[in-house]
Length: 176
Picture 1 (cartoon, rainbow, N blue to C red):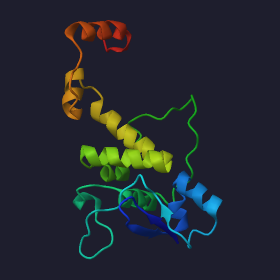
Picture 2 (picture 1 turned 45 degrees about the horizontal axis):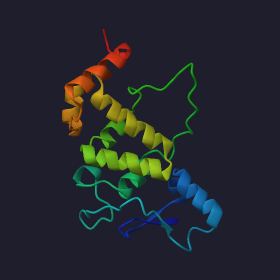
Picture 3 (picture 1 turned 135 degrees about the horizontal axis):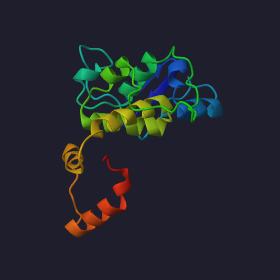
């Protein structure tokens, strides 16, 4: 078992095969050796903030903020998956390539989704990072600039002239 401590000092015990889905944790274990002695600190990832029914871990749908628990749950879901093959130019991955279980897992509020993506990036979990980013890509696919701004609460700080200049410079990428 590997002990992991979140930024809010919550300690999680997980099996080594689950913990090592994070390249960061795997490297720490290889560098330090026995992971049983000291918990591995993860200062950039918060722990679960809800406890449901005395259980150590909340279910994702009931957690107002998803954190290290979500990453552990994802790693547990995918522990028996074969290693992913590197992408080639012949068969690039698309944003539609999301398994149903991952769609369900990432069916969370926007803030939680971005937290998961940041944690996956920090922990160097490529598969979770990819599926999280694909989910965001699907959220903006087919939307206008104004719809994307509204979706992500982005304030338009361009003048009409600057906006027109940007549209002209990027005309090549618009659907016609």
